[in-house]
Image 1 (tube, chains in turn blue, red, green, cyan):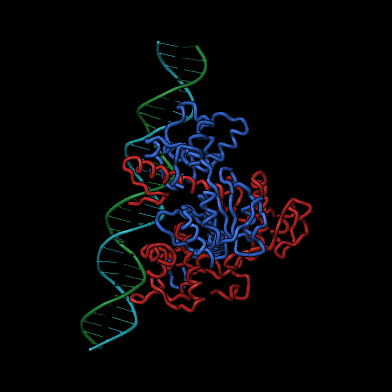
Image 2: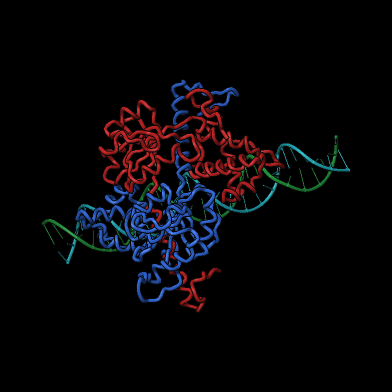
Length: 251
Length: 251
DNA sequence: TACCGCTTGTGAACGCATGCACAAAGTCGG
DNA sequence: CCGACTTTGTGCATGCGTTCACAAGCGGTA
């Protein structure tokens, strides 16, 4: 964690003061997109592409070119006017800003269907996120290796997380257990949590939580289905434009 | 809860014209929160709570009260001043706006670790989203039931999706297959896609895509770890404000 | 019925993110 | 060495979403 930032070993590449200032100012939405750019750029690098323009990159990333340039400007000016960006340079700068020069060890709690899937990803997509600890309450699972790592009992969270310097905790438990697991992770010094349980977690201010909520995603899609169906209906309806109360619908 | 969801038939409960207008105007961010409110409210209903104030509900949902009221105002005025909201009433109105009065059948493509986990959720969290079709390319999987549903070959997507009236497609394939699978889903008439593959999908305008990107989530967390570490560094740099072991320093 | 206290609903101010448009800065050909 | 062309980086305007603050409305009480 933030604790032993001795210069010794797994030292994160320190940011220059100027970059530090910048990192503080990057909008959350831009950070998410930077991660996407990084993936696209990595793919390009693998295919031997060495240079790219904002236009090309933005298309591949599914955003518009102006936004992409602005996002990149948050991390500094590493392009060449009239030419574009050097893929390798961009990759390394984005990695640095995202803190990917350091390994973040991950603990997965709750080895059910989803937990299994996560553990088997084996070092999360994109690498740099080795899964180093698994936890569950089920006695039948304790000691069984999943994705190469033996499952520990949930009571050992604190000790194991501290020992293995876990920096990211992933909660894949049933909803009722989520808050309690979260509390234990926090008291083990974990400051970043990825929550798959459909529960609103209460955490101290210094802990960052991101949630992945399948039910919510599905319901958002459902909303769009419904909206579309209604639009279609009102069109095919001939849209006489008034309901029971005679309210007019469209300008 | 919306126990009798189908109301007898597959017919979606039609929105009143006034609601239709409203639905069009609800900000995307608010839709996502409405889904959260719905879950919290359902939990309350199960515990016998019948009324709730914006203050209580907002705390349970992890937002501030003003935002909650504004979100609810997008769907109409169903509260009672001086009292609060009737839980049941709110639940049914949110369900209606989100289109949950209709069942949305779901197809999962790619029955790997994640696909297995999704299929086994068996009718997605929160119900109303029955998984009715599974697809993969692996010959060993075809015909094998997962979560009660036999896996079909991916070439049958079009036929099966049309037949089972799939309205939501979930892509859980390896990245290289995602775009092709997406195209097939679209040509089978699926208009909503939930994408777990770390790929930017290209779709026509009339198709809605939501993506769940684990790598991006992890990298956003990584960014925050890094930012924090740097802040801590710059602080302990200027003034020695650091205890023994990584206790966080907060203003 | 009239008053009081509480909670909703919303107009208005604010702040952040997106999109535009262009000057700055570089390459390339002659 | 110069001029034409290309692409970046960014100031500014626009629009959306969040927050604030308060009037309107309702139940309870005398």
